Image (cartoon, rainbow over all chains, first blue to last red; front, side):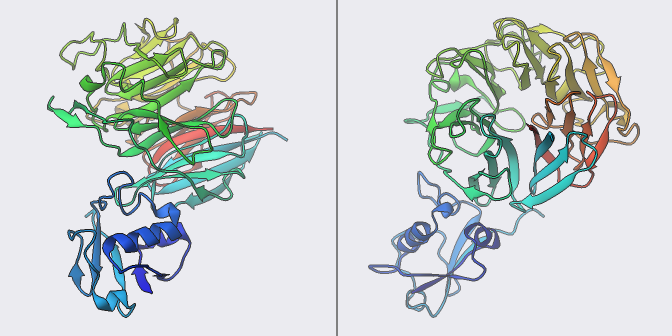
Length: 98
Length: 371
């Protein structure tokens, strides 16, 4: 079970107040977690990754176990602590606007 | 009992303002989608309870929301806007080729007859159509591919398709406008398009009379005379009496012919409204006076409408999609400002009063007349 922490605007969009727990098959990678997240909440398609290129949207970052995974390959395995649900996978919106 | 529903898109959410036919007491609902930019909210003429909203931010991209109960509740629907084929390039600000990139939906135009059919005008400029209530979108690619597309260039606000007008008497005829490419028309349901910019004169582009490249800010039409179009260009208020084949200037005695919004009285097809703005570098009204100008002669002769509007120290802007009319008798006129006011006149512009004063900057105003 993977624990995913969404930015507040996306929590509002999917109508959850807390964090999201996801079952991910065949190993936890950036791609498999995001695929599972979008399968559970189809309205998130396009809000985290571009729908056509699947590139991360530029003002979002991915963090796990204090590591910035934003530029990692989509097939990078997530740390064991995240894969086991002990630590969350963070999707964070850039703080911008002055 | 008749009434009106005003749909307001702002920089930080959508608002729904409702009143009965007297248009004196208003209920305000919102913000819907708080914190997001709502470029446009519009209802279906075929089913007034069916609304579509364009919701976006730089962080999370584009969403489309749909309501089936007049804006009481909403559901996110399809937001995949994929250009048809390999998109190619258009011109960048410096004239170099730049890849076509989807950024946001500026305008949603529901079909006149089918609540599930809706058009979307997007940045970078293209037209999309959905026939399943906005669940899926397909580009009307004949527009972007008709030949002049690679020479289109963005205006200061981006290269946006911001105006979509459906002809009620010719179902296959549609007009669109793009900043800064110009106006275009299809007569075959979107398969083929042609630029309709003959007569436009723009001194700020290399060829002032070019086929494309004009910064058209908005176009309006009266449904009883769909071949007559009125245009607020970057500079110049223009009119065409032949479906855009030829334009002539009708700025007349306006204090400045720069502006964004333009609309037509619901019952008088020769009565039109604009909000003159001082210049393209000073996006506020001349002399700090917020004035709507009305022409009852289809242009050239204009009168200032000021009763109830601030006449000193007012430095707001009125954006292109932020003016609308209702179809009650007498015609109500509405507009929103970047200062967050939404003004209403229940008597065709004679008197104005703010419905709300302190919303986020208003991006769009649409009105539904409810019976």
